Length: 449
Image 1 (spheres, rainbow, N blue to C red):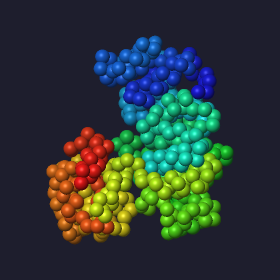
Image 2: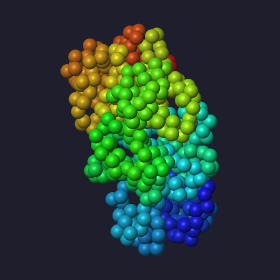
Image 3: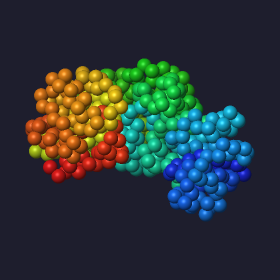
């Protein structure tokens, strides 16, 4: 950990615990700051708060006092999920007290450079793929951020010869001031999290934070197939590396039906890449570009690409059963994600879909339903999805009680050469606590076939 002294003896409020809050509080305490932690969970129900108190950190639990900022705090480090409409956060901004997320702290204490990956879709796949290719290439990567490992905790242990591969949400990037990754990636921009950001412009500006502080010594890898992303790229001061899946180009990284090109020259063949789908090709292009810039050996990248079957619950290959390939895409909690999954395959599909009914239309899926020969619907939207499938002319339609039940219906509907795909287009909360649990139930049922 770099000996960052600017926070020494400063009075800092850490708002919200969870993993990121605990790690931030501990590091700030180590850096010599006077730290107070505030969390809504009662003290006697929070082992984290109890542990921080034992380390000499002031803890206020069970409530958020309205006069909390009267204590003279010079900085607030908040949990990314806490919105800026929160009374304490809004009060801090009104008082011109800086508000960070722990990503900013991670950057300030790190001896290692960052690769920062953000975007509406594809972040986790791109992040994981970069990490695995760099690891196979002996480049000493560490993985952090929104993918589940707290960035400042990783930065604390990082050394100069490491590289920190970091998945970044818009929530995290809004709380950065000086964060400056050596390599930044913006995969795409679609409407998302508008309940948090208020408008799409606010959301996109937060995403632009991944490159905002970069300069000509850094690299910005971006989606050249999305005009809105290209528009934001013009504002970046970094060296620009566009990616496109629409054919060979002379700049950046590109792909046609058979080949991936780097700066217009053939770089690697697509034939041995395991991960299906146009959206995943875009993720692969961004990841390969980042690894080239780090100096990773091409052969080591190809070894990973030949076996990488996707991130768990994101068009994840589960198994082949009696000539059918079965995929778990439980993370597809909206129509856009399911549309990408359907577009990834040319083979006939048995689609398992349904879940929490938010009243949204399935019409966005209609152009992708031509090669769906069977639908097994479940959950609150089950009946609505059945009606939608009928209107699309799907041959075989069944309604099931839940995901496990749906697997047992899907198997006899399928034939050799088909794809059985769980891609619900709905959130899981009507029947399962998370999309991960829903996906795990699916995998368990598939493994029992």
